[in-house]
Structure formats: structure tokens, C-alpha cells
Image (cartoon, rainbow, N blue to C red):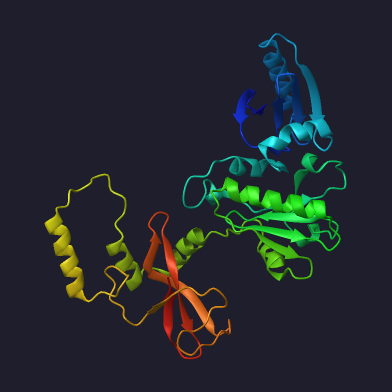
Length: 335
């Protein structure tokens, strides 16, 4: 089975069942060619879709059946045909471009133009769990209904909201689809499930709006620009060279000389080039974060900030974090 997007009158094969309400798609299993028509597409796009379906059929001898499917009226047969490719998502036209991009490394591709999406997961209109689809709804708390589940795709996080009256089927599909979004982005997400009534963090995410980006890399980069350059920035720039096209051969003697120089400088362990013995380094806790000095675990007393002396990723630049205890004043970082 193949899936095509009609783009500028031509066929463009895609690998993800992401349908934009402003476009026309062909779903081809050789015996049948489905022409899926979004409810916001133009007359020209509809005409181009029908013409491309006939051309595709004629190239194989004209034996296929051509069926038109309007958005919102997908048949069980159509949905089952699409299901093996993944969760069928129906989104607004402006959202499809980013979702269709593949993931590379670091922040997934296209993140800078990302807008958060909220999907409704409802089984009421479907007879078969494998013939369900995800439908984009306004990114607002007003969209939430107790009878359904909702999946919030925040780019580098996936939140799942379960209404008090939703069914087991809806919970299962929402969980599966949340994990599939995670897999599409190279496992960068940590899908989190919220139950209605215990969902303050989910509501806070909706309040931040569809333009808010959950990527630490993007946010920290923005923070560093606002803060301006400080001593930590200069140290980080010195110990983390930018990518260069030229590779220099290094002899064993030069390596040994560098090691001796670092030992003589008294640099803090684990932080190349950074002389800072005032920051304690501890193992990351499994439970609630505690001050390593006074033992307080009150989250209001533990303040998190950017540790620009600890560069985790050079491009895009991602820094580690450091913590300050408001009770005793100790400063620490976690491995």
C-alpha cells in the first residue's frame, strides 16, 4: 500500500498517514485507489487529485476501482487500510509540514517552526479499535471532554489526558499513539499520563499556548541570548570548540602534555578547563531532589538554574543544570 500527497498537481509519496484538511491524498493498494479530500482544499486540488488517480490507474491497465472519501466520512475499510502505516492524524494544513519531517539527532527536525497540537481520541463513532483516527482540536482547555482521551504533542514531550468517563479502548489507543509519536522522534519524548482531576501540569501546558516550545535546547539558547555573555559563557566557548572542517593529527606526546597541563592547572574534576571547587557534584537522586548539605527536599527551597560551565551538547548548544539551596546556600550539580 502506498500513500501520496497531491502537491502542486503532482504526486508526492509520503510514509506517514498525516492528512491535512487543506489537501488531497491518494491511498493506493493496487486493487483500489482512494482519493481522500480534506474539507478545506480548493477545487483545483480536488480536480488534480481525481486526474492523478485516473493516471495512476491507467498506468496499470485501468483495473483499479477509484473511490472518493470526504474528510469525516472515512469508511471502516479505508481506516483499516491506513492503520498499518500508523495512527491516522487529521490536522490543519499549517501543521502537516512539520509532522511529515523525519527525525535526525538532537532536537527533531523542524522544531523551530513547531506549533503544539492537541488530538481527540474517541471510540464512539468507530466499531473497530483498529479503525480509529486522531483528530486535531483547538489547543485549549475548552476542548477537553470527560468522555474522551486527548493527546497533546508538545514537540519534545507527549502528554495524555484521560477523562473520567472515557473507555478502556480510548485509553489503550491514546497510550499506543502517544508511544508512536515518541518512536517517530527517535525516543526523545517522555509520554506522561494525566487523569482528569489530577491534571494541573496538563492544564498548564495548554495555558502556555500552541506556540510554546518545550525543548530545553531552544529555551536555554533563548535564555543565554537574553542574559548576555558572562564568565561561564567565555569558559564554555573556550572548552567546547565549534565544528571545524580541518582535522589535526595529534601525537601521543602532545596528548600527554595536555594531561599534565590540566593536572597542573587544578581544574575541577569532571569539568575540563573550569576551576570551580565551590560546586558540589552528586549522583542524580531517584526520588525527590534533596539538598546534599542540609537535606531539605522542599521544592520551594531548591532553585534550578543553567550551568553554563557544563556543556552537554555543542550544536545546538545545550547546557546542564545546577541547583541552589535557599535554606543553607549550598550549590550543586547532578551527574
